[in-house]
Image (cartoon, rainbow, N blue to C red):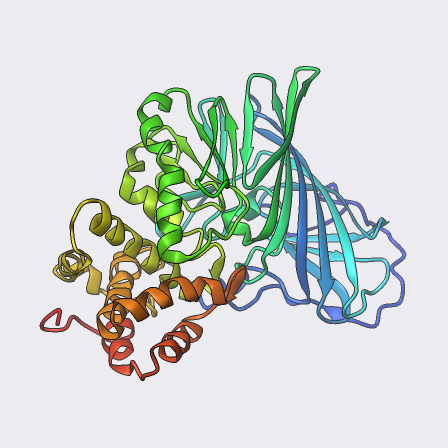
Length: 456
């Protein structure tokens, strides 16, 4: 990370600017998330990111421009963007140079004139450097991951700030256009629909469009040599898959099942919420985990199994379309995704979900803390969030019956489609659909300390 500096010291524009009279106040440098209080920024809401990324795999260098369209939610004299490590070369707001200050991962922009509440404004940031790989509190690696033939960008929970400036909290979702320029013979893969691809002067440029709102941690970029395939679901949804050539043959049979699996999940969860689908399969070791990156989950070969693929595809409804309000609500994503694994076992392997529930109940590590109350940031992806979260879902099913449960299973992502939701939103929704109080379920399974004597 760079130490605090002015824009002049950081190569940015704005040194010595004549800043006009301002009536507003600076937006907050952080949204006070329970686990990441400095993540995200106050005072504005982003509607669109246009990212133009030019990457040299040999040097590991990124030269990029971000155009950010946002609406002010207060009168602004200045506002912040989250950005880790990279050097800001210039910045402007509505085509006028902006003063830039840097303090760690906080980039503060002061426009020439104040921005009125409700005003839509466009911020352009040109930046460059070697993107960082970030090690999280739990030891996992995210951000910009170098691979043998390129790079892989993964952003949960905060790594997206390693490759573009923005409002990097899940509560501020936006549409995206991502342009990738890489050496010819190498491909760039990202979220959404590929709208164009061209090769000229030894460089290949692809453009990807994400029409639906996306949290920044779900944005991804894969750069390397890929074998890509196009197909479609029975409903006509385009499916694009990409596999590293060294794992393409092994991954091909399961990749071909994606249209079938999405059709099956639509029967359970309702209409697929996005305009594209697919997956990216990387070599074992390129990433230490699978991630539900929007429309195109990323899975290393050692995690590419039917159950895990069902998990990551289910996230398109639970986590991606309905995104946690804060990181404390992450069990809403992971609990349902694990339950999708249990449904897969039930429907494809004749293993009732009750058996999966009982197996999870017997594992002591699943009882370290309540799924809705992880004790610290390093515990956000621990077993209770996943397995005990799925147990909560199953207890709802047993309490309300299969008919009402399936109404909840499809109705919850429909009610909060493309939005954010909290644990309180979920419990209120379930009780409203069920027509009864479920405090006994919440008290024991969602918030209870310790393991019940019996699974009930």
